Length: 209
Image (cartoon, rainbow, N blue to C red; front, side):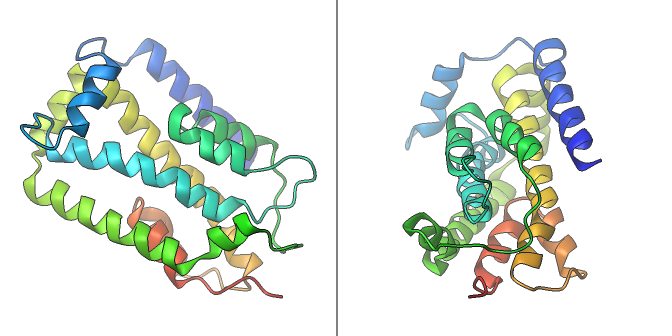
């Protein structure tokens, strides 16, 4: 059922992109150039927030998935490629992936990176800074207008929430892998996009040895 749900989400996302997303707005390169400006930036802070949170999501997924033992299938290429390709490659991995609720080792340098509280703390700090900037300086009406008229803003918003759903679908696996109870905290981590995930990374106990 979980894989069927993933497949439906993935297909629905592509149908939306090619069938329903608006065609207007700047080109992708022009939009990214505008977002990256440090002065005279014309992009609304909420749009800036979501765009940059999409750079944090792949690192969260790396931190959640590199502990998987799937034989020759490795999670990290799919997770890192989502920085450029969005969630498409990630959803392919999640569709192929088998549930794994126990850590089978060994602890590689990439796993040590993923388990680092320094990484978790940095991601949480960046997320909080983006949330504060976006929600205090941004305008939801401007964002809504961009969603309905700008192709890239529309697609990146869909991508953002597909990452949120992907995290929620693998969260229970990681909690069981660490012998954590699946309680009300699960919903805190799962339902607050990015912020809940980074809080989880900071608070989760280490892998059992």
